[in-house]
Length: 371
Image 1 (cartoon, rainbow, N blue to C red):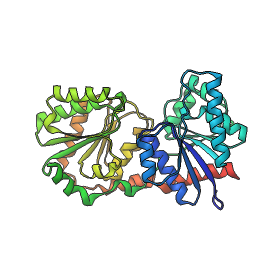
Image 2 (image 1 turned 120 degrees about the vertical axis):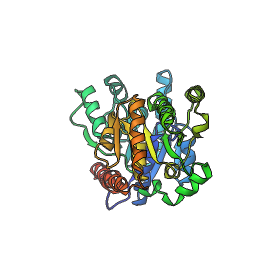
Image 3 (image 1 turned 180 degrees about the vertical axis):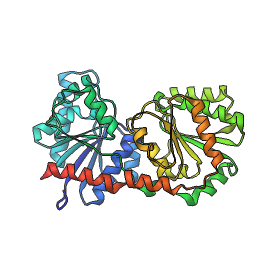
């Protein structure tokens, strides 16, 4: 891959912009910058395709889901993948997770195209056996935790499939806007407040309830706190429940509500601390984004969040669902009167999760498949 142009098809599992697709985009951007060709296959038009258009990426809409399984449906989808791969002639197919791998893997096998599968979420043995009828050449895990969990749940998985941990990598400059901090805080009317934020789409495991109960607890000691919520609920059900809880806890006057934001780095610039109260995170991309912005990050002691924060200069791990411990930790950070940005946090995140260190690992994987 070093000396010749490689063509890669990335398979996205969703039309939405979550951590997985943001990580896919980071890979695709770096691969493109190195002079290689990229095509991204997405299941439908949506927020993610809008982002791809903004970034001038070539993409193709092809829904990988089968719905109720039937041989006719399978072969119809398979024929579409064969047509796509024949027309583009990729050197590598890289599925961004297990659940967009199944049909494409058969097409890749027929055309003898090497396969890479990213394991980003918990992979139960039953799911692995179903989706991986065709074995990939490489499995990539987004954390040591995720690799250990996969091997624990799949003890008989073939040793012949190579395995590598490659952390999600980031362009540090996308999350660093200290020059916008004062202007944003003035616009939001929080110049003299301590601003605590949560960023993430609305799923039960993201811990929004814990965040709101933490907010209620913090306001008991000081009315100087304000809280930013950034994210989107694709079904509206969880969002409606969260808004109802805000009302029940009488937090309406203290919450700044944003929906989906393409550029979370700008939002991070205005915060004083980022909270990640997830009950489960295979990696925990947003925690790295907070570190790159130069913020203290308080997160649940679970999954990949432990790997990210246990050595961070201003990283704090607390018990999942323990809103009192979250509140005490945030309160202690406020009392320290830290000066932002925290360059120790940013430098740590760049050295461990920056593009260069992790892309070199990805490049070695691709090179082993092409040559």
